[in-house]
Amino acid sequence: MVAHVKSLGFASHSKGGKPITHIKEHIKYIQLDREHHRTPPELFTATQNSIERIEFFKKLNEQPKRGVVGHKLVISLSEDEHERYATDLKELVRDTMNRFEGKHNVKLDWVAAVHDDKGHPHAHVVIRGYNEDGKQVGLYPSHLKDLQAFAEQEKERQFERSKDKNKARDFLKELSEEREHEPALQPADLIREQRNKEVQREMKQEQQRAQRRRSHDHEIDR
Image (cartoon, rainbow, N blue to C red; front, side, top):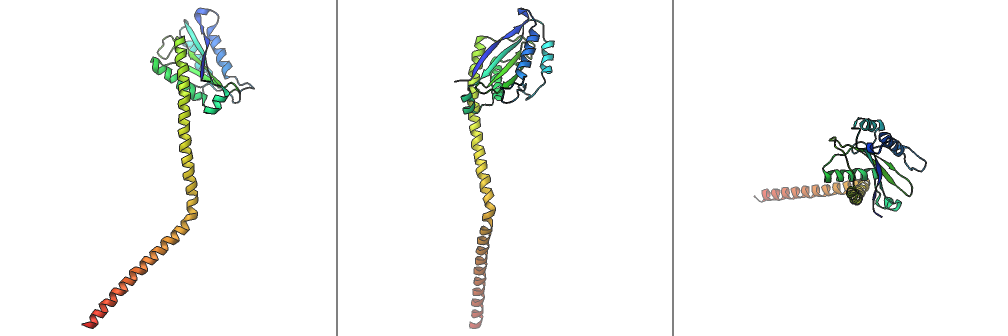
């Protein structure tokens, strides 16, 4: 199974009702800690690991009262895939959104939360209806296909990066273990080195004595 991206629809002023309230309630829902969550959900953004929802609510209140208020997405993996790839869903959301922004040359304002549910790990994403440049944000079927492709590609890339990290970690572990054994080897190494120096010193002294004897014999002959 591949990483899956699904739209849960959007809230718009053109539909009537209370679209801002609708998006706010959805954000409260994705942040709510429930029994089936293995870890408590936290709201996060592209640059912040944890934010207060009131910050995002303020932006919703201040944006123009026309058009789309917000889009709702879900990025999910199967439990088997999540374990096999050891995927960090928070980073997967960030990487996927970053790829989308890069392709479409747009800076989105979004907030997300991971629901680490057994059998259905997924992340909810809410994209504000106006981007950072104050322009209306549309989310069409072609955009969902892009997000789907990016999510799958970034899942694979994250896995490759984790393998490289594991290799580096294993290398450092082996190096650390080797260093732990070095102190036990040092005394023997020092003894051998000391003996070698003593042998070299004795050989040098013997050469000097032999040279002095030859000099003495030469003087006697004269």
